[in-house]
Amino acid sequence: MSEARLLAAGETIEAPVRRPARGSLRPLLLGFLLPVGAAILWEIAVRTGLAQGRLAPPPSKIAATLSELAANGDLWLHARATLARVAAGFALGVLAGTLFGALAGASRVARALLDPTLQGLRAIPSIAWAPLFILWLGIFETSKVALIAVGVALPIYLGTLGAILAVDRKIIEVGRSFRLSGFALARRILLPAVLPHYVIALRSGLGLGWMFVVAAEFMGASEGLGYLLVDAQQLGKPAQMIAAILVFAVLGKTTDALLVAAVAPFLRWQDTMANTEA
Amino acid sequence: MLTFEHVSKTYATGAQALDDICLGVEEAEIVAVIGASGCGKSTLLRLAAGLDRASGGRIRVDGDEVAAPHPAIGIVFQEPRLFAWLTVAQNVAFSIAHLPRRDREARVAVALEGVGLADHADRWPRALSGGQAQRIALARALVARPRALLLDEPFSALDAFTRADLQDQLLALWADARPTLLLVTHDIEEALVLADRVVVMRPHPGRIAAILKIEAARPRDRLAQEFEELKREALRVLGLGRSAAA
Image (cartoon, rainbow over all chains, first blue to last red; front, side):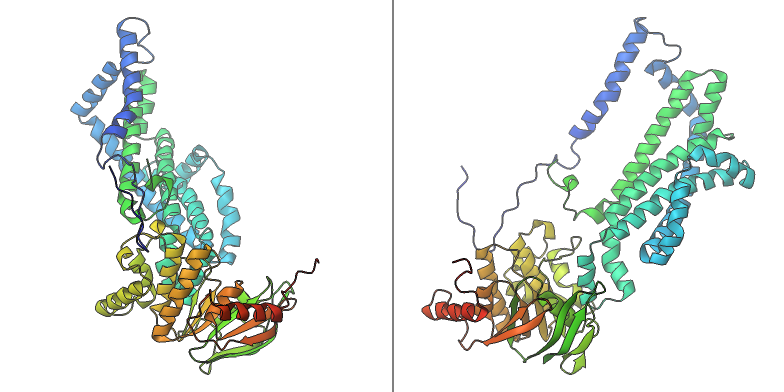
């Protein structure tokens, strides 16, 4: 039985946060329930002849394709090629997007100059850029990385700008009242204040990077997961198609999870839904 | 030590917030500024804090003209405005980050003791109640040892119990270093409990209507007969006696 007592002056009780213990498997297991369940059902359907396994191969066939690709080294070859392109494009895109976003956020003139153009560019779908970039930059790596960089830069520009414009004037004033220089104000107050918003922009940029790499690899690649997809289409190998898509999903999710994990220690302080009761 | 010499402020929209304000605040004096909404009392404080510039006249602190935030002047706002990404201790240490670690930690410890929140040093601001957060804001302003502290309705967002408690705490903190206090409030009782002088302002445009001098020694007992009389007198002077609809 818990005892009731009056709190001493200044004493507080923090409500116990009911979050699954760190490293708890429960949310992870629940997450797998749907895809694994669907896969099992599909396997059973094909095995018992309820469904045709030609256009939508059962998981066993897909697993076989994957292990074959892994065995002859192709899987790593293609995955690595795609990953390298995403990494390079993402790095460039983050740099450009953050730079322009910060510029537009800091200066009204810069914003007036840059924003309309960049907003216009954002409206252009990824595939539309590909032929132009190939024309300008050739069909090898440069055009692909450039395409991904453009795709990543624009949402990051938007997110960075939005994050800066959303900073509460009130805490900036506190910094001013302590006579912080412009640079110190940006480093000690602006930067931490925009971080949560900026991380969201980074994640969406990364997601778009994965999207753009497919477009890039469709338009003439000799290796990569997108190439595997096109190759599977041309040779009529649905299992390979789905295998490639699966690897995309895994890599995409893993890179996103890595990003989230990398920034998590800097966002422990947040007073949001994510940090309270699960 | 803090003087307002013919200070006026007109905004770009044409609205005149302040008209020819002349006021001198002595060393270690506590001055409260009260008045209806729109009388310019918060504007007055912001000008003294250097966050806005006066359209006319000048403000001086110890002879220096105030045109930008001045090192001798600190300010506490109506909201705590704590930095959510820093712990309580880090918030309090914000303005003295340039000091060597030992001095910094010592000063922060003293400041937190002063507001009674020493055991909350490693908490995040999100874990604090409104009153606690405002106390930390106070500690953060005081740790820089300002010679004058401006307070813009610091307790108006809090409930009556917390407000009375924080008024007492403010007096206790003031008794230590005796900075000059310029406090804007809409709570007449608060002004009477704390201040040596009460400046009454009227709006449209904002100007000083009256200055009440309060002789009674502090701490003033809110329950005492004397205080009741003081309040009665103040309300009379303010013209807030019987309501107009009679």
